[in-house]
Amino acid sequence: MEFSHDFIPQEYRAPVIFFDDSQSPEPINAVLALGVFDGVHLGHQHLLRAAILDAHNRGVKAVAVTFVPDPDELVSANPAQKLMDTTDRLRALSHTGVDAVYVVSFTPELAAFNHVSFFDKVIGSRLNPLSIHLGRDARLGRAGTTNLDALKRWGATRGIAVVGHQLVEDSGAIISSTRIRRALQEGHLEEAERLLGRNYVVRGSVVRGRGEGTAMGFPTANIARAAHIQLPKDGVYAGYALTEQQGIWPAAINVGVPPMFADNPDSASLEATLLGFSGDLYNQQLSICFMERIRASYKFSSIDELIHAVQADMTAIRDSYGEAPIN
Image (tube, rainbow, N blue to C red; front, top):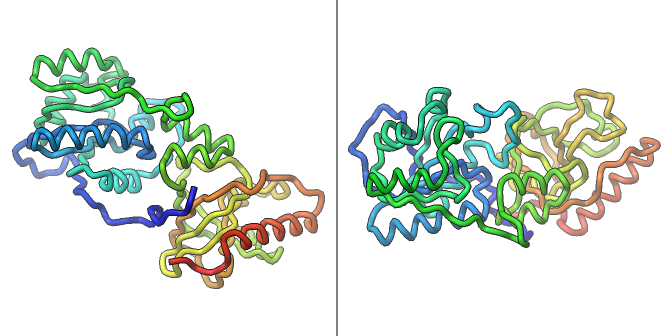
């Protein structure tokens, strides 16, 4: 996928409103798009566009309703890795064309609600839904016991249209956050980015490492990202690094602990060498934009062999991406 400046953090385009805010204005008429929206991928975008069109036809606001944290983090014994942190997810939703993003704080108390209590006590405190759009596989209520048919029956008693959308497919398979995570885990970066509709980005802060890269002549930025954010499969990638103050630089990116240093528990699992860059990045926030996978992670027989391989990686990435900052 071609590079896009979309990975640069943007201001919120639509307001983000928390349901538990102390202010309680009169509920507004709205069309809702309801979901977690991890990744805000092409399937999510299809659902959101349908809700926006419905709202336009009804002359009311289009509102995306999502949850923080992801309910999976609270109710699952083994929650899935995430494609986006909360800030990026809310920001991306605000750029989809909706008029507002409403955030439900997901708590153990809320998890015990049935769908009637959820819509009456939470949604109804701020919004008067004329219609609700969600995926056909959506489930709500305590332990996910309420399916689409039950929601439609409930909606019919309230004069609310409940619209279940057929899940969008790509290459004969459904587009889902799970599929995108699997593609990343298996090293299929191009597939993941096609389903997302944009480059895959991981953000984190630069921390001090053990200095193996510097000792070999390749200064690297060791990036501490949130543990719940999905990384692509271990290997070497080409991409870009967005710094806080020094612009965007082509980068050679390593994911995973290099096998030669696997006995070092402090070795970084995400590190980047910014090509052509010189300066101090410690404690800065760095956004890593993955462009392509160069090779798998290998265990070399010697440090010299590793250095030779890294030099070859750098040359290949430099030839394709240069070594100067981009605008």
